[in-house]
Image 1 (cartoon, rainbow, N blue to C red):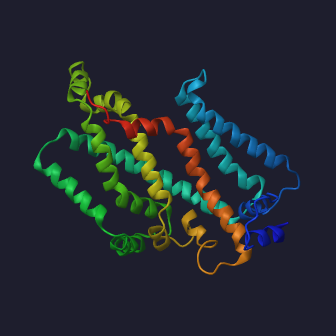
Image 2: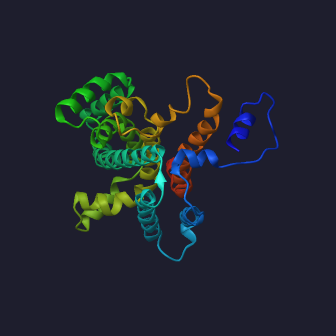
Image 3: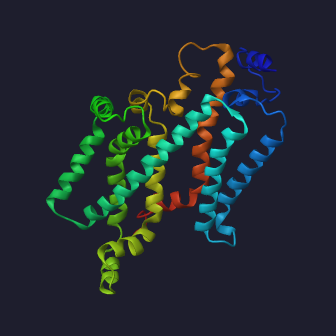
Length: 301
């Protein structure tokens, strides 16, 4: 079956009618196929159920926060339990590394960005403008300008080839983008909202957490998704700062690029589709928040 598929993929005349197969996905994700298909069927059914719950969360009788928290807990349990049930291949380890690095970078970057952009949006002095211009200048620098400093820091601190160093580097590189994007959302929120909350007895931090943050959720989600894309697809920093904690962009190099070997064509296609599916699922879950964030401030009056 695999040889026939390779011959079809390498054929000069394209085939419009062919027999589909998932053998390449099995070889990409698993070292050995389970003896029974029950495990795979149950796993795929669980993934489909989670996707449907995320897409139709607003139509469920339960609050969305509870549904999203349950989906997140189920995803973590599935990712942790899969290697204990089946023999996963190296590509699965790359996928887990991508999740850890991307989620960690997004959480830290958005947290810092919300606090700093709130201050920059409410402060109109010259120092705020200087900080924004400095952030823009750092964003304009090429990746090569950050490699040696971070590599040196990782070596002397013992953090080389760790998740922590990669997350710190991604946060530092992508933070200017987060700052500029979030600041525009904070600028659209009137000062009177938080001032009214502080008159009622709330502190500055309390007004920010209980009043401003709920209004900012669409902007925060949009910024988080764009930051996730930047961290998820990062190649150069991860390649230099790690030796064993490779992510999916580095794993793709094993199947794409260089000499085109006919036997690698099915694996190339499977790796490309597999690395795209997580981002597609995230966009499906948060598409409404993304649209709200992108359209925020587009209509005035």
